[in-house]
Image 1 (cartoon, one colour):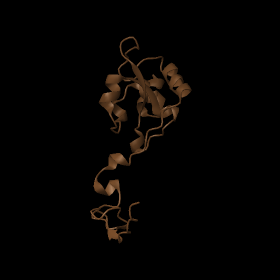
Image 2 (image 1 turned 45 degrees about the vertical axis):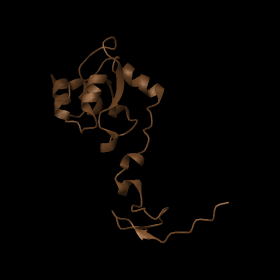
Image 3 (image 1 turned 120 degrees about the vertical axis):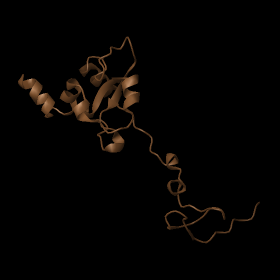
Length: 138
């Protein structure tokens, strides 16, 4: 049976300065974030429920709301208009939209410029946008 490990003294983190209990004598950082490995601490995404996903696809008539392509041309996805990382609601119908692979990949996690959106997208996510109000007045 190996001898019990001796407890190492507390030491300051090289990045944030917070005291931590090292596991081995060469430890310099208190967490993966301080070490620069944020990807190790990133939370797993929660999938949109299947019935909600189908409801969004049905609401959008099974076509990409950005470019108008139909599902026989490209595979469709349910996309967040305002990314979760930037404060968008995860399962709000007004923050979800049908998008093809190309439009979804091109958007990435960027903050949307609502003035550039097609009118049909604005009707879903921002019904009080001036473009929508002007179009309904015509």
